[in-house]
Length: 280
Image 1 (spheres, one colour):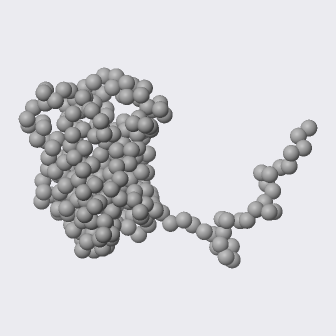
Image 2 (cartoon, rainbow, N blue to C red):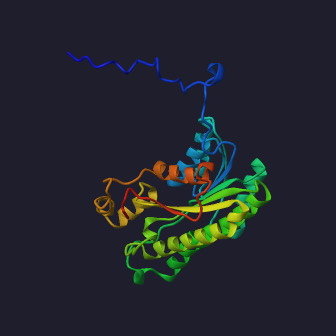
Image 3 (tube, rainbow, N blue to C red):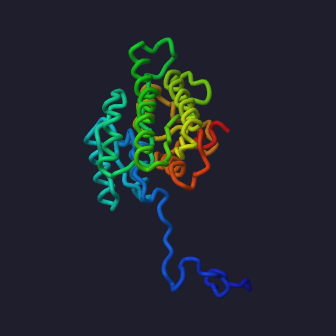
């Protein structure tokens, strides 16, 4: 016979932390409650997951990308779930388009508090000597010049409205070591890491934090393209991962949300690896 006390229902000596004074329920505000968030590459993958999450965490979100149908679908999904969101077309290769997209957040919501620069493009996988000049220029324009343009516009908007805020750039674990399959992609993401650190050092005293996340293999359309070009790449990378799997886009979005939130108020200039231990 088991004579152990039943502790599953014994609450006599346990304080009730679910209610406040006068039995008023205590609810925790969302990570981004009251903030206005701008997200690039928000039509699919990590960007769409981030837009959904930021809205659930209390932010008013402006989604930006090049494909209106995708943006509209994610925006409507957020609204149907009770969130506040809108979308704007934005081409990271076009400086005027980037500035206009950031300005649109201020026009819609009156301020800008946080931004997630997630939009990017992949290169054709393969050795660097096989990449054309045109492909190099395309990857550099979108993956390096795009975040630089976005940060310039976001810093100006935060400065002029909220006064303080946070920016997260989406990098890659492929930026942290040799990347023979995606050498130019990795090089541009490594440059984003440098821009992130420089921006953190430059704007920290203004109360603007700048960090980056470096995701490991994440199940997105971009990775599907890579798998199509290099069959078996997902299995090969996953085999080296201590957790034994790829990430879901939502898991990467969670890291971005925390870095953008006030709970990360003393974190700036960090390249946060979100890679399941791949680079451990």
